[in-house]
Structures are given as structure tokens and as C-alpha cells.
Length: 278
Length: 237
Image (cartoon, rainbow over all chains, first blue to last red; front, side, top):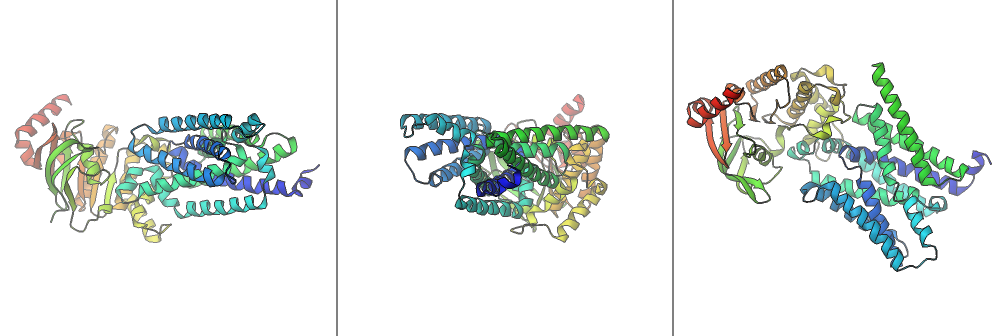
């Protein structure tokens, strides 16, 4: 079958649309998170989401998003808020929550075993299931609307976001409501993670957040360029990853991550070359 | 009327008092240096003046038409900034963030202001350079230009010469002096007592959890504490 023929299937088109949108949103926020030394927040929150999914399965909630989204957002705000007060350092807190919810989630699923294929269920949640290829048109619309909200918020708050990321104390001293914006960032990150779990699974979400930002930073020197490059990088890698996985029959999530890694190596190399040339 | 006045304030974190009974005021055009040993509460005082942390007791007033969000702040550099991808222009323009309010983008006036601040700091040709590739002295000029975008009257500087080489240090001091002569009020934390007594009009010396001296520089040099401190540091350097 040629690539064109694949596009005649709606599920292929849906997967691509959703994949590209999620890649775009996560890369936009990724730059801020990486620069604020919060790269691991994506990882931590996705494990929280895993725990929440386990809870939803056990409680037999029909649409697990009703439970998963609020829990993840709550923990995101908790993590960002705690980071400010520094009773337990931010990274330790993230590690604690992340591993805690992973462990408890699996335990819950095991004790209240409702499915005959527990191993398969867990594996699907962790590494991304085939659900990206079984999306309904409703899922696609939900994703489109959420992405538009994220992108609009990003554009609207771009200048404040830069100020907070570069120098939070300066921003606060000149009257920017930094804690409100941190909450906003936390909420949006949590939303993206809940969306992205379908695509790459909870273990691999960090890849979507950090690789585009880190790759763009190898080459570009202004914040704006890094943001734009990071978004393009993410969209291109995700598209290639999804196409390869459909044609080659490889798992979607890990294929995207593999493409991201290749891109990162390529960008690092170009960055080195540019430095020598200068 | 004073630009900034503190009456009997006590400062610290989480209820632990670091300094108490602190009273001083800064008038328009003053150049105040805050000196004292490490851990004496200089930085805490600065953060309290900037409303980053609340005072434990007492009040800090801004007067003379200065709003709390119209303070130009030159912080110490953070690790985050060392490898931050940002152009000089982006950094300087971000000093106008307090003028945005709910507006998402900068207007022409703000861009003009950013350009003017860069001219005052003699760095307009650096605009497109990356902040992380600059020398320490150039980075401080960029951050000072950003602070100038945020204020018309009051600059608060946290150890502006930390980590600079001797020439860049001298440059920085003469830049600050120039701004003071142009009418800006300066409040600066400093380790360097020689420079503090040379440039500042007023000295606030805090140590051992209490204010030890506040007044004009010439009186400080006559006071016992001033003589002792200047002699100690002079002997070292």
C-alpha cells in the first residue's frame, strides 16, 4: 500500500491531526519548562495520570477523563506551588509523587483486577496504546479545541511568560502576578499531559516536552527563534514518527521518541558545526 | 517627602526574625549603600523592599509618586540565565512588562523606551546578540537597561559588581554614578566598603541582627563602626 492509500482511512488522518496538535502544544510549553529546570514535571505528572487512570478503572468510571484531568491538574498546581516554598525541594517532590503514583496505580489495578489482560492494559497505559489509531471524531474535536485554547493562551501571555521564565524575581518585583501565571502554566501542562497520554503513553511524555526544546536550543539564540524552531521540530518529528509506525507497524509512542532522538543528535551536530564556522 | 521609608520594620523568613527595629528613609536623588557582613540580612531587606517577601512587622512606604511596581531592580544573576537563549533586545524589552497590564503585546512607546535604555547603557549594537554569549560586564549592562525600562525614579541593585573583573567593576560604578547624577535614586547592596563610601551619599550598615548605622556617608566615616569597618576591609584589600 502506498502512503496516499493510507490517508484514505479516517483513523490515519485522525491520528495525524491529534498527533501534530499535541506535539505542537507540548513543545511550546516545553521551552519554558526546560528553562525553568522543570523538565521532569512532565514525567512526574504523567505518572500521576497513570495512577488516576488506574483509580478510574477500579471505580469503573465510564469516561476516565472526568477523574484523570482534575487529579492531574491538582497535582500540577501542588508541584508548582511547593516548588516556591521549598520545604521539600522541587525535584525530590516530583520524584516522590511520580514513583508513588506509579506504584499505587499498579497496586490498585492488581488488587481490583477487572480485566483478563492486566499486563496488556498496564503496558498500553505506560507506552501508549493503539488508541491513537482508534480515535473517534469526538476525540479529535476535543483535542482540536483544547489545542486552540493552549495556543491562544500561549500567544496572549507570551511576553509575561518570557519575563517569568527569564527572571521570576524581577517579574514579581515589577508587579507581575507570578504565582497566578505559574498556576496557569501548571494547569496547561497537566491538560497537555492528559491529552498526550493517548499518543505516547505515560512513560514517554517527557520526550515530547524536552526533545524539541533542547534541540532548538542547540542552534538558535533568541527565545522567539527557539520557540518557533521547537514547535516545527516537534511537529515534523511526530509526523514522521506516526507515518513510520503506520507503515512499519512499530509502536507509535516509541517510534516518535526514536525520531525525536535522531533529530536531537542532528541538531546538536549542526550546532557544533555552526560554532566552529563562526 | 521620602521616596521610600521604613519604620521599625522587622524582617525574616517564615517568622524567624533576621533584623529588627530598622528605621530609615531614602529621599529623591539619594544614593544609599547597604553594607554588612554575609548573613546580616542585606538581601532579606532588599527582598522585603521589593515586596518579594512580607515584613514580619512594620511597614514600608513608597512615596513621591513611586508605585511599588515602578521599581527598577537589578538582581543577582541566577543559574537559569547562564544558558538561557534570549537576545539582548528580548531581555531589555522584558523590563517593560509592568506596563503591559492585561495587554498581550508591547506597543511602540515601550519599544522606544527599551531602545533608549540601551542607548543610555551604551549597548544598542548588542541588540541582536545572545545574552548568554556576553561578558559579565555586558550582561550587567543589559540587566541595568532592563531595570531602566521598569522605572523612572528608583533603582534597587543587588551586588551589581559581583563576579566582575576590576575594569568592568569601575565601569559599572561610573554608570551607576551617571544615572544618579541624572536624577535617579539608587539603593545598592554592596560588599565593597571602599566603593560604597566613595560613591554613596548615605550608608546603612546592618549586622548582628540590628541596624548599626544609618546616615550620611561623611558621618559614617567619622563614626566608630564606620572607622572600624573601613579599616578592616581596607586592610584586607
